[in-house]
Length: 191
Image 1 (cartoon, rainbow, N blue to C red):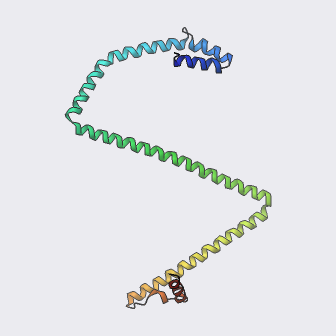
Image 2 (cartoon, rainbow, N blue to C red):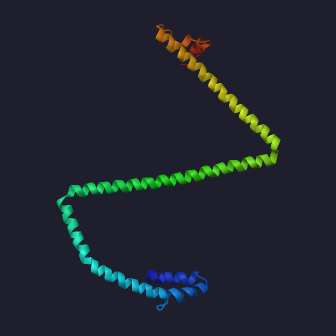
Image 3 (cartoon, rainbow, N blue to C red):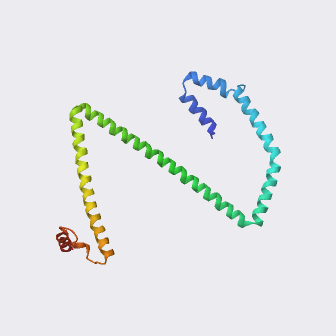
């Protein structure tokens, strides 16, 4: 059975150019290369460190298991706090990812509108484009002014009703201003 190391060597041999393959064989895979010497040295140092630290780690694990056995409630509380912290970190990461993609989409949308605007101006000419833009802005302004006028009229009617209620009169709002009676009759006929 082939080992994964052999598979990796096969992939390297089959996919790398000959110059790079020679470089990898000479400087990385050769047993006398500095990389292999560093790898052997780090393995020896790591195994010596783990051999020296293993008794201390065993003692720490024993103390930890005794502490958990004596105080399971404290351990449960710590586990809940750690899980809450991890959950908050995951949610924070998801929020940052969503904000990144939303900002990116909005920037792309903005620059797409700018490019569209420039292309329309180049295609139709400056004066024609400005005339159309002024017409669109004026129509939007007209719609907004109509909405504001309706809102102001309704606000004044409610204000007048409140003033009459404070003065002691209790007339209903339906007949306070011109045309309201017809609108009320139409509304009642609809339902």
